[in-house]
Length: 250
Image 1 (cartoon, rainbow, N blue to C red):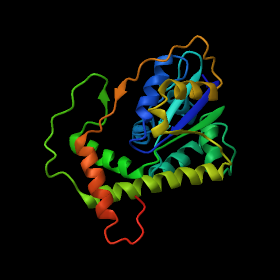
Image 2 (spheres, rainbow, N blue to C red):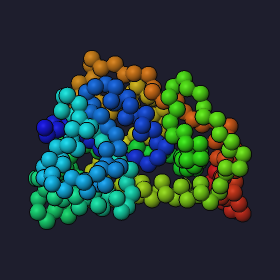
Image 3 (cartoon, rainbow, N blue to C red):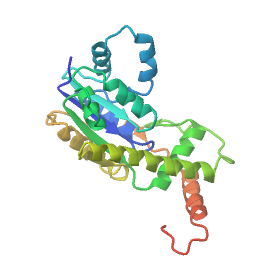
């Protein structure tokens, strides 16, 4: 069934995307947004006999609620994104010769809207990303205990700096896509989202043109994983990054 409304949440790691997706899924009217495309391309190699229309229908079914709303979240990175575009170019309804990547995306997911999640403090984002890699605690369910991991020697300036650059480049790729499609997304800022959780979720539902009058917003499914180690790494990184600078940014 063709979605009556579809949307993509564009994100980089550690911007609150899973928290938002869990909240939207719990409403039961906003699709089931998830990283449906993460391994999807690899899965298609075993389905060569399926038509592109069948593949598209299966993809829609993964993230759709009963009211016909389809949700997806995706983090821009190459060459994966270009491979997706080439696959979507073959989907039914995509005009032959279409080269605008945003339009190709929107033909794959009709009646489409875009949501962009970002985090102002990229130092804290990069530290959180590295710490999640080292602990393998990407999310913590509300009320759960932290995963016990020895992080005594885990700090790495080079790795945090790489992730700092990587998140910036991924956001630049997303912004280029928006510019190409003349898209003005709904922008959700992590620092604001965690302060105004319910208000933000309702803002997203309204943006998707969904009736929010009878919808109750659940308590946050996840809680923050920042701790004293996170703060220590943040302060250490910002000092080392700006060592010798005459004009410091922070």
